[in-house]
Image (cartoon, rainbow over all chains, first blue to last red; front, top):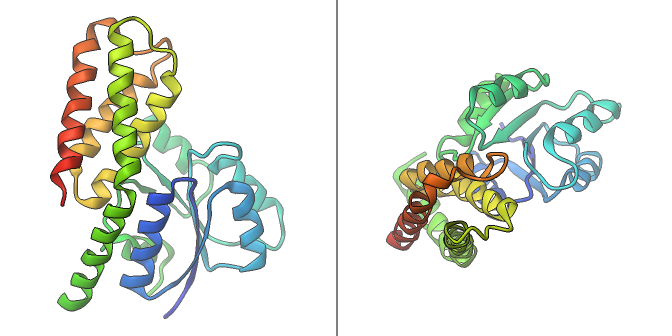
Length: 124
Length: 108
């Protein structure tokens, strides 16, 4: 089944590899945004089935973007998966407490990213 | 995914590597310069070094360079320390930056 995924990440290389992976391996439609603010706009303009959200971004970071998504009735119920390069246990606990569907880690395996997302969201 | 599709993905990743190589090398340069500055007691932009290490930690493994991710993560931890890395790590910072340069150059 095809899905639309919104990737919000300020790092172009990560964003492009994730998009390539999801499009090529899973055949999903991918919408990208390079900042939290742009991501909020894209989520309204092109409602996705799930959002892959970077944690560390300049300006509006991932947790702040998540709070804004939850405030808006149009985007409040969209599943969000955090994407982070932080591996310290204290960070992981903090991110898990934000109420997201899953926390995924960079670096990711381009062959496996769509499978990780599907598993986290119960997609077949 | 069948072998042909996997091959197509690998080829696309190789093209992306070429596209992003200049900015990855630039991040390594930032880390090399930071190590030199730190050694001289003149590290002024710890934030830039931390950001460069953070990016490399996140991206190198995605291109199969897992050792690069581990080394960059080590630098990220040191540069994220309040007040900067411990003085005793000056040579270590330079050595890791040099290893990252070699690892990035090794991927074709």
